[in-house]
Length: 108
Image 1: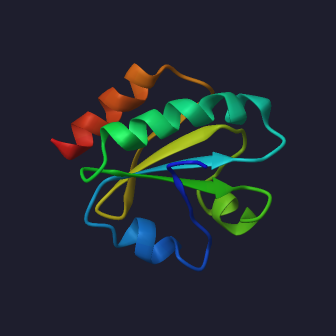
Image 2: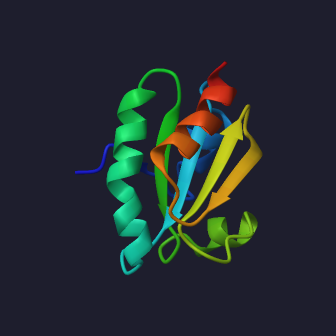
């Protein structure tokens, strides 16, 4: 089971826009092999930043409106939010260190 909570349009505002913590949103799909490869890395990041940042997942097939709203044209697509606003983005499979460095800058 993933350490990253699934987010939908129904709970997006509460989980991302109104979060007191920085949020890393993984836009992904079940058929996307690179997304599946990135999953364990995101689980590790979620553990590393537990209590300091949130890591959540959005299935682009199930939540097309969110994907369109944030201009997601390819996946995996990692979007970083702070104070409810998009502040950074990473496309593709990247090392854990890259993700952790970007989150660390947001948590201070």
